[in-house]
Amino acid sequence: MNRSYRTSAHETDTAVELNPVFSRPGESTIFPRFTLPAGESLPSTAYQIVHDEAMLDGNSRLNLATFVGTWMEPEASRLYAETFDKNMIDKDEYPQTALIETRCWRMLADLWNAPDAEKAVGTSTIGSSEACMLGGLALKRRWQHARRAAGLPADTPNLVLSSAVQVCWEKFCNYWDVEARYVPISQEHPVLDGHDLDKYVDENTIGVVAIMGVTYTGAYEPVAAIAAALDEIQAQRGFDVPIHVDGASGGMVAPFLQPETSWDFRLPRVASINTSGHKYGLVYPGLGWIVWRDEDALPADLVFHVSYLGGDMSSFALNFSRPGAQVLLQYYLFLRLGFEGYRSVQATSRDVALYLSAEIGALEPFTLLSEGADIPVFAWRLTEGYTDKWNLHHLSERLRMNGWLVPAYPLPASLSEVTVQRIVVRNGFTRDLASSFLTDLKKEVAYLDSLLAPMPADGQTPAFHH
Ligand SMILES: *Cc1c(COP(=O)(O)O)cnc(C)c1O
Image 1 (cartoon, rainbow, N blue to C red):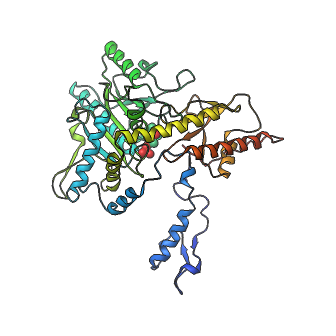
Image 2: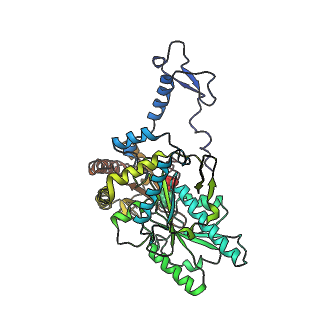
Image 3: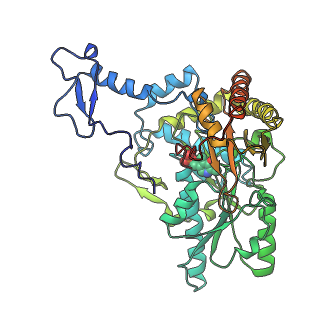
């Protein structure tokens, strides 16, 4: 198991040194790395140390691995600087921020076609992971209430989901004692599509997770087909199983680029939807959203009423205190871009993704798994039989020498022998940058192809753990 959350492996030095030029005469230029320094230092000294360390992080513009926003325009940055002290939980002190939070999730409820936006309920979160925990907890509690009301045991809940779910769902099942029933993806069924669902669903199923924008490939799961399979199961066996849509990325893409696709509250079986404000919502990290269709979908006994900050504040969240500034940034963007602005930003990313995937797919070594037509994310594998001299891990290392971060990783269980490489096209990854990337990609492929002997077998970079 990776223990790097404890101490980064390369941190063997126990001291942080500072160039004496930056410190006051007589002030320490050596700071302990793992213990609290004994005394104070000047603000400028501490600043210089943290600034220099942070500079060693990668250049986010060249990071084609992450989904998370890394750029906002100057007005947004100004707003951020004016509001970074706001605490989201303190709705009594910051009632306006609380009102704006409500406006935002009501806009999302509308965007996701809630049949009665007055009845929808929602909240902001720190990210999609927290939102998914809340969505999962609501499914579990609702199932427990129904079981107990019918005089049936309610202690062995299960959740049905694709083997390609994001890790937050594995966490949900692990942390809240819910059995995860993974439907394995395969060549014939690369996403959860309702096929064979009957074998996984039973009276203890609290819900099915459908992903709009699978992390591995960017593909949408056909939520309508999953809902139809569940309709059939209800007709045959009587289980009324709700769907939670994990729209971490797609929740802010599909309404703009695929408005005709029915994946949201238009499907009566969809109980709740989450998205990441900091992915295609275009806000700095960390912001997530979740909306429930109506109060029936969110059992009231999960909602706490807190009075110690003044007033009577309802709260359904894992955190208590949490930054409120990102919520204001989301509202800024909703006003700034509107529907047409979001459509145009996402369409630009999609066009870059389609251009780049077409170019990469046309290269002999690569076979595409997706084109970036759903969310602007696509993945490819090495064409079978192309070479035994190098693999995608080697290519990923070579690209990193040019500054590009393009992870190579195995597909989940049952397809884990297939290694893929993925690009996430985000706002700011221009066609210009895309063609520089292509030039570097072709150069590195030519280099690897020109090797006289295979790369060492142990070339797999441990740098990406997904
Ligand atoms: C990114 C992602 C998550 C987790 O979202 P965070 O906002 O990073 O917590 C969950 N599900 C999917 C499908 C994702 O892509």
